[in-house]
Length: 339
Image (cartoon, rainbow, N blue to C red):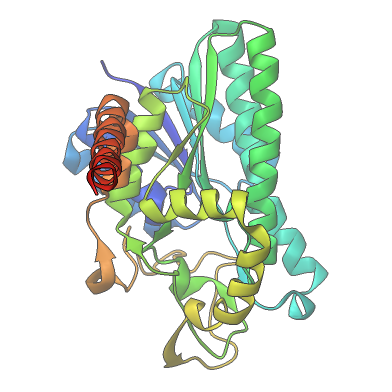
């Protein structure tokens, strides 16, 4: 069945890859982003894949622009079925070197942008008693790392805000569902256009996954929104669980390794262009697409994501492991008894 899907941050990275997947399903896709070059590319991707697309230039930090974009999407395609919040920005820098204006900007886009999108989507979906909202989160929303204080703070805030809203929707017995897909490190263009004060080129902390891998996780969450959240990538699961049980140990580990692991060996000069306040893919600009510069180091598949989408298989693996462990233990015990 054809659905109408709205995606923020649709011009590049995860949002761009998700838009193409929607196109492959024959969906109507409303694409929200700032940069016209990236939006034009996203429209081509969706239409080449078999869907219909509408480019809606907007800055998600401005509620009025998001509201206007949603109104245009419904006028063009009809009622919105799925709203996916992806848009974000960041600053790679020690906290002491970030200005108040920069921190505010990251928060307005990467946190309030999700709030604005959710507000607009809920206002349209709630009277109809149906609809799905997907927040594209991050493992960094559970376990912060150095040099990304503003981004990590925003991702933590999204988790808290979404949990509160989910409780309200359950209280109302609403037919509107909200879920979160928690992301690992992904090979997106952000590392080439994010504002950075690091001496070397920013990079995602390995293991790195291709945007298509995580986009499939986003779409699975959209199709199965009754679960609270989904973990995409083994590193996401490991990060969330490790932080739950040994957070202080992770503090020390990341203090020692977190600076180097987020930088390549390539030196970067001061003042390189970034997209914090203005898009780099402006009129006549470059279309960055879904992928960043780390294709050769990125995984095209995730066994953990497959298991997360197939809970019976996961249960089978767990049961098999438990049985094997019990058999091994039993043999050891019986062997000791015969001595």
